[in-house]
Length: 245
Image (cartoon, rainbow, N blue to C red; front, side):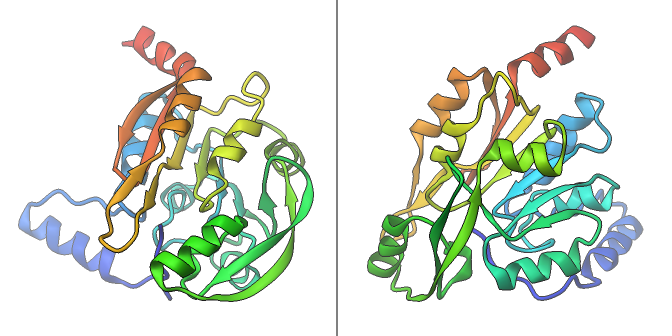
């Protein structure tokens, strides 16, 4: 669940300067709930300075983005955004990444992509689109046919190796995408997955037990949870870290 931003302001630099003058420790997060700082700490523990990433449902180059912090620190990866207008912003704002105007799904296909009046809720899921209309009072402003690749196709074609980090936020297909991953072949160190869907009216959230169960069954440990997103680390990576300590 993300919001749009128009441009990167100078406020972080001003805040950092004032914090230093006041003797206050300050770190800037670009994620919705500080997920990037949590993952930065985790990758520091894993001794991975510049983690490669695939950001599925990237949405915006930096605003509420889970991978922009790593991009600023010299890491590179792949951003996937099926909305053509949002994709244009990614190409401009993340020129040193690979930016793809496609979707990721359980199989290669062309699928209907529903552009909502609130673009943070764009979706390939007809069920989710209907829910947005009926429960959130939104409109479907456009329906486009968009090319969809599998996770393996996108990684093998555009990365050549398994990414260190997967950020996943696709409004309704997260579980299907995770089910389609061959974890014996592709085992990223860290996943950041949206595990919250919003209920009608009062803004209360419903967590996805299915996503959590799938990640645990495939050898991942819940490292942190911000209520909206859950951060998982591979048990094999965690054991390596524990051995070092």
